[in-house]
Image 1: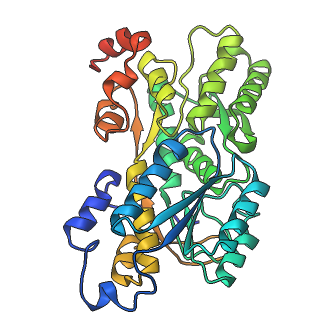
Image 2: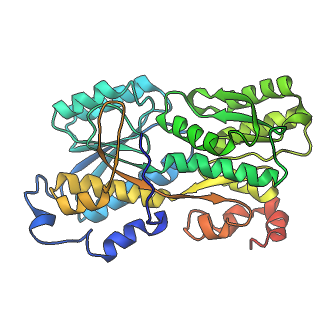
Image 3: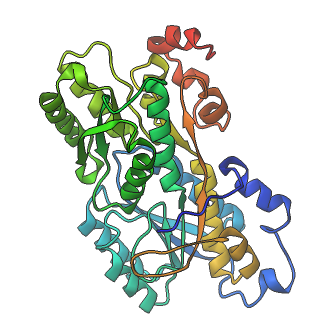
Length: 368
């Protein structure tokens, strides 16, 4: 997949489009040949429940945005596959049978779902790949800049190791699921920063992103390398970072090495506050989810100017070239940037982060 960096920040993406009049554009181009009115049904297929973002952020944001864009006449039919490719295939077929108007698909297995995507296309239902680049004849794709995610993680890990870091420093890589194309891009981005600068002593792909599998793999790495010889851990997301930290503590490690993450989950932010986890990658779920809803509605209503403005990038999947896309930027969340990221964007309040257990640590870093 080609990565095309955007110049627009995630937190201002939807506002900037609205500000220049695109999202509410009128005239021939913006309203030409609408195929649907406001009474539309958006099918939303999300991949799993271990990562709390999907139920807490993505679904409610998309639901609210669709309602806003359709004068409350549009609705969202939601299903979560709970990390099961076969369940998601059934859910996709159910939405085809129910004749939803458009499908937002966050694939559990990007390759395995391709036939289902083709069935939707044959039924005249557009499919927009959401967050993960599904194979098959998708109409558009929206996600974060996934190689940049890995680059940010890799750079942050090197920063944590300090200027004296070198090839004598041994790193463990706990990568995401092999069926998730995003995981491959995260790894590639991280390796572009780490290769030649440190030694990748052990590397594991983690089935279904399961924290317990990450914990078991980390335990293997500790046994192979030795608990005192691990300089840092690349963990592709926060759930797995939690498993990594459990394994390190179980092995008797008291001075934890820097551990990366992604998704800015609340418990991970709290681990960053205490220093157990070095960083996470903050991705603006409101920006991604709102833009996905806008893309779906614009696609159905024939608002080509709006749709084109929202999909100015192009990416290649293994089966389709030049997919109209939107790649959203990301940023590092560390102890020093919590206030400027998740707090500033209203993802969590200081009170939610700084509960009694974390109050002293929050005060120590000026988070109050």
